[in-house]
Structures are given as structure tokens and as C-alpha cells.
Amino acid sequence: MLSTIILFISGGEIFFIMFIVVMVFGADKIPGIAKGLGKGMRQLKDATEDIKKEIQKSAEKQGIDTSFTEDIKNEINKVKQNVDEVTGVVKRK
Image (cartoon, rainbow, N blue to C red):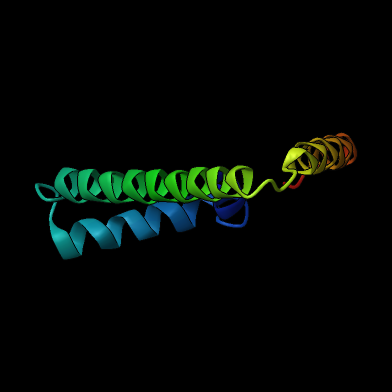
């Protein structure tokens, strides 16, 4: 996900954003902010995993066939690989 966000931001733009962050918050507060953002992202990821597990459990309890999700994931991965093969030849500069 992060790589798709950074894809359209150049090095100069990243430097400018970091400069503004340092000017607004100060260099001493940046590690605390990064730590808080990291914790928040981790909690969000854990919450989504918990929700997925609960949905999976309730579907299995109801007798719903969940094997098709693996088929869908496999097909998505195949498409991703095909796209990566095509875009591997065409690189952005």
C-alpha cells in the first residue's frame, strides 16, 4: 500500500513534506508522532483481521461454503503477477 502512495511523489516533494513537518512539530516530537501513527496503523490492521476472522467463523458456523474465497484470492494473485510482468517492462522515471 505504501509503495502505491509513494509512486506519484518525487524525492523533492517528500523532502518538502518532511521539512514542513519538522517546522510545524519540531524535530523532538517527530519520533513520538511516528510511534503514535505506527500504533494506530497496527491497531487498525489488527481490528480488520479480527473482523475477517469473525466473519469467517460465523460463515462456517452457518454452513456457508467459504472455499471460494481462496479461489478468488488465487485469481487475484495471478492477475497481480500478470500486471507486474507487464509493468516490469515499463518503468516510470
